[in-house]
Amino acid sequence: MNKDLLIIGCNGFVSAININNGNELWRTKLRDGVLGGSRGSDVSVLIDGDQIFAGCSGRIYALRTSNGDVLWSNDLKGMGFNEVALARQGTSVQFVTRVESSGNSSTT
Image 1 (cartoon, one colour):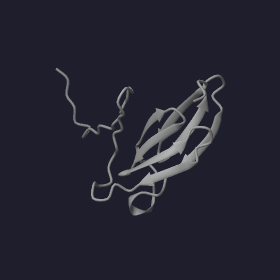
Image 2 (cartoon, one colour):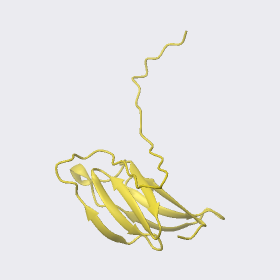
Image 3 (spheres, one colour):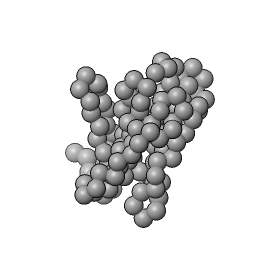
Image 4 (cartoon, one colour):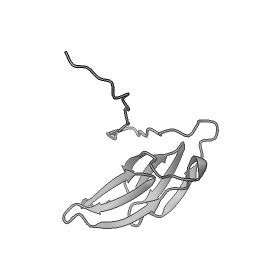
């Protein structure tokens, strides 16, 4: 993989960003999620050589690092439609999740 790439997952998309100038090189919309949209969907990404694995809306995808083409996808039937955590032996993974608060907080 090109060391000048930052791969991000956001709102149902996977994108490659050039780390030297911030320019977006490509963007791939993952398949529509539940109720017809992937908008607002958290995306987990894991890079392994020339492939990117992405998890979104209860599905997993393999994308080509060079251009974002989808190589394959799996609907993970029967596992629901939530965030997908990814891991491979020998790789480090950061998983970001959203925590919503009721807005009623007190400090002591």
